[in-house]
Image 1: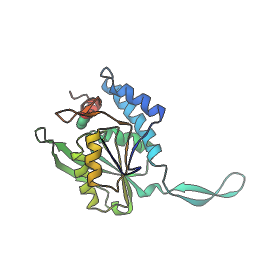
Image 2: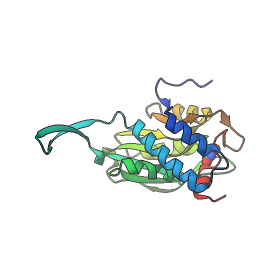
Image 3: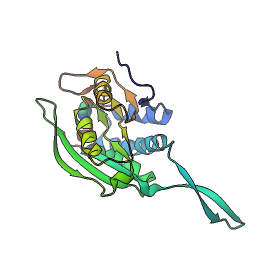
Length: 214
Ligand code: URA
């Protein structure tokens, strides 16, 4: 039984997201279609997870008169992709957050221990002034996500959110046991992990499906 701090984990139930996720899960969906759906879902997820973004008022002039109007300070955001599958979400999110800075953290799962091993990390230099959205399609064992958050927290960003498509109950429990201050958003909370650390029913290996590498 998964017991969570209220609101820390949120499934985004928007019908368009749910519909596209179903198409992505289907094993007959090829890489080209999978990538397109991931890009579209990621735009919709970005829309949902930025709902609480602060607005400021600026002075502008319409063709008819002056007014003060709301804008967000897009320069203060950063997207961090956990390589390599995170890049699929990153691409979609950048379409609606074009001025966000981008970071990459490269981690792979040791196939035997399922532990996360870092091989790359490049983050925006001013990340401590930014609200960060970390993206990775699958929150499975959460070892990778936890390692990425630890790395990121060393740089002390203004805030962190974690966005995935499919989460496992085991992954959410592991993640939230390490961090109770990072909201987690998913399009689905699936049933369980298998013995190889894959999510069931899941959608398979997200990286392989994005890049057609299997
Ligand atoms: N990573 C994936 O790509 N898929 C899973 O089911 C678990 C981890």
